[in-house]
Image 1 (cartoon, rainbow, N blue to C red):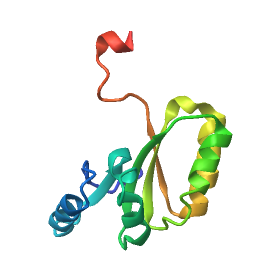
Image 2: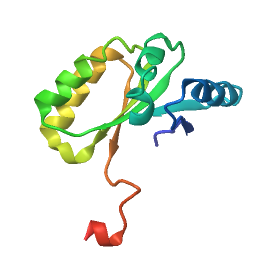
Image 3: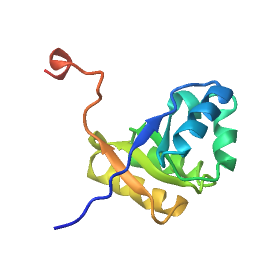
Image 4: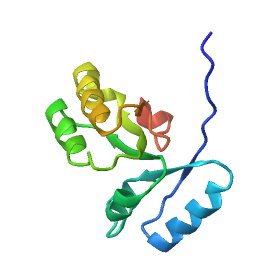
Length: 128
């Protein structure tokens, strides 16, 4: 049976760089991994910060588009070599997932791709 490593992510859900740095500094002492979502990534200084970030992190972009667009989007962030975990919406289908994986491995050969199936914001009514 395969043994799974226990990895804990902490959401850095802010666009304020100084607040993000405080969160990162705090969680670092516990060996936790920061998870940067779209709010931080799209912020004025977020992308630039991640270019120079020295530790592994999760980029929670939940990619969801056609295979060519997914590949092109990942190609544009290939300089973020410390990405260890990347998210993609499983609903992109098999071709989209393959395109995502192929391009993600060019960023980091040991990247872990996390498929998102259901958003936590959806309730039973939305799902029906």
